[in-house]
Amino acid sequence: MGALVIAGSAGAERDPPVPGSDPAWYEPFHVRAAAHARQDLAARVSAGADAIVAPTWLTHRRALVQVGESRRSREWTEAAVRLAREAAEEGASDRDPAAPVVVAGVLPRLKGGDDPTPGRRPSVSATRSADVHQIVGMLADAASDAILVEDQADAAGWTEAVTAALASGTRTWAVVEASRADDAVMLDAVASCLSMGPLELLMGIEASVEPDTAQRTLIELATAAGAIPGVWLRGALAAGSAEALVRGCLETGAWAMGLADDATPESVAVTRTAVDAVEADKQSETEARDAAWLDQLASATHRASGGRALWLGDRVLTRLPEGFRWTVAPLSDIAHLPARAFRFAAVDTPGAELGPIAPLLDDGGVIAARGPAPGFPAEIEVLDVIEGPTVDGMVIVARVRRR
Image 1 (cartoon, rainbow, N blue to C red):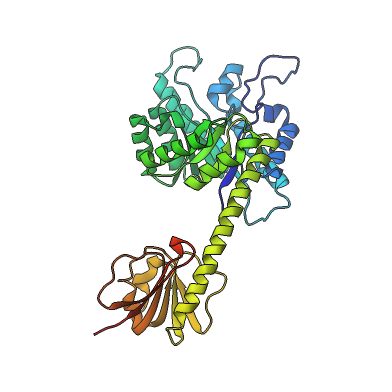
Image 2: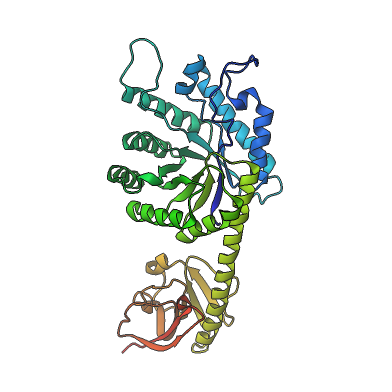
């Protein structure tokens, strides 16, 4: 699957309620206008979003205490996730059911000192901690597919929020602002959280940023954190520069393009179009390399006389050379495969060491390895190097010669 398109908010979901003529003014938008909110979310899915964020920005205690409705926190959080789930199903009615839309619940930025609870209170840090764990618990209980942790006021708050989300066992996405790409304290926090579990980072950055700047910052954060983030764009994405921005980010390895606060159907469609264009180009390049690999592989098989053959790689091409009885396995399964059982081995992992593969072949067996390979043991005799149209299209053909 390619990069995810994530649709965040489009305005009303984040807007704190203000007194007005509507008697239900104090309710979050998805409660006050459920049908409208569901329609908005479904439209984002129809426009091409692979994931939507349930409107839980204002359903936590700290937000609801402002209007005297903190007791409704769990009820309204569950309603937000449920409504998003319904919208996802409605908007994706004509899509492949094998790739359902992801519904994420959001843990928004909690400011350190904005708790207005009257009377004797615990410390700000203790109150924030309680709020974080309550929000995560509600999102997990509501069966969110993922928990999106937005940027927090400081590294300690971010770490606590991410740690709680990971501990819930729910898929966790966490936003790190691009401005913190060189903040040593924040990067230490990121490294610590990455070691705890399968955390997926998103880099928060303005949508108006130049593509070169976005790509450079993404590389800086990926290098410092040791993991390539997705992108979390704030503000309007200009249609004219969208593809260049998306292309730069995806070529760097970004796993997602997210719209933080301008996720209108129009913006989602622009992002979807850009992602699809980049993915189509990547698919064409992959197909061209695979076609060359198959041609080179066919040449290599002429050096073997048929029999049992082994395909080593994390993927399998749609067709393999005929005349062999193929066994397919990932490279990590080498230790579990029988020794001297194969006449031919195709290694679909560029840079794989051939030494551990040689014992799997009988004497005179042939190996065809995709891409440059490190040094060869004495029992492997290189027969040919077949050059393809690209460097990674090189195929090394070798024979096992035992003395």
